[in-house]
Image 1: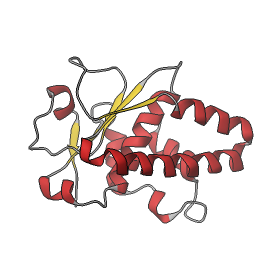
Image 2: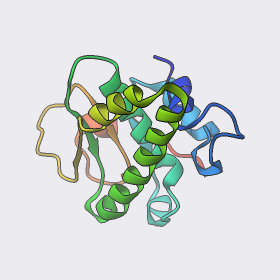
Image 3: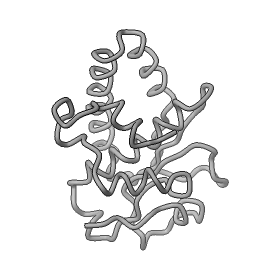
Image 4: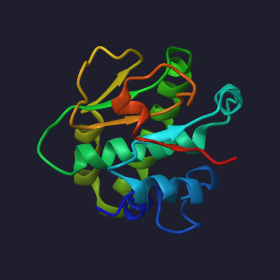
Length: 161
């Protein structure tokens, strides 16, 4: 699945129909092209302190939704640090509402029902209760210097900017 096209399908296909904050950026393209070898960005401690990480969160959400959309019902984990949890949940909800509106406008009410089902397959986690790498996951907000399980640390790409 082409994740750039998937992103555009979720949030609007043209700059005129997509709000500026949800257009595909060069950083998001890097992650989408690196999938499945990459599942999120590795941040420096300075980047992690900046709360303007909407671009990276959107990319992780698109990676997670694409995995959920691609097959039968499956749980897809989104891993993020605890200090991002409340903010990230609010941002995910806003993006999901926008994507639902885009889907219904473009494809009718049935596509909205499908997207709701896919969103319901996402599972947000702040800890690493899983000893082994789950089959379907994405990550957001981790520092490259942090203590992470190898299966996460090895699948993050360096964030630019």
